[in-house]
Image 1 (cartoon, helix red, strand yellow):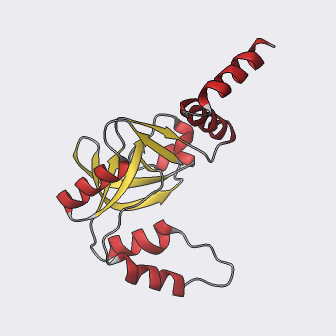
Image 2: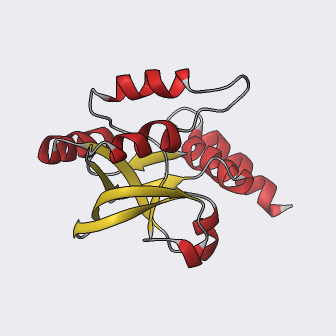
Length: 164
């Protein structure tokens, strides 16, 4: 997943929200396609202002019928420093070959202990989902076309290929 911001960098927005709420921040998209409820973790909680949700849990791929909101976590996190103790506990609790899930091993235990989390809808940017084959190709082309050195030659190549 890649997020590209136009006016404000992703990290600047995260840091501003972190400073405001003194809490961990999860960037989100607002789900617009019903299929996305089966692709992302969906946040539950109370919307404290437009596009900001104070979380009380995250449900992985709940499907539209079971989704508590339209806030989908799309990766990337800004944690408070106490995440390190939860990381140690989460890693210690894994069995051989078991995958570490951020939502199960960090976010849910931190929420259960009363740690604050906020989901924030990304704004003023373009999101690229590189976990989808077609979206990955679109990402490569978009970044390639914007590249100062490679862009003009790539554009000429694509225009020529599209004529065939």
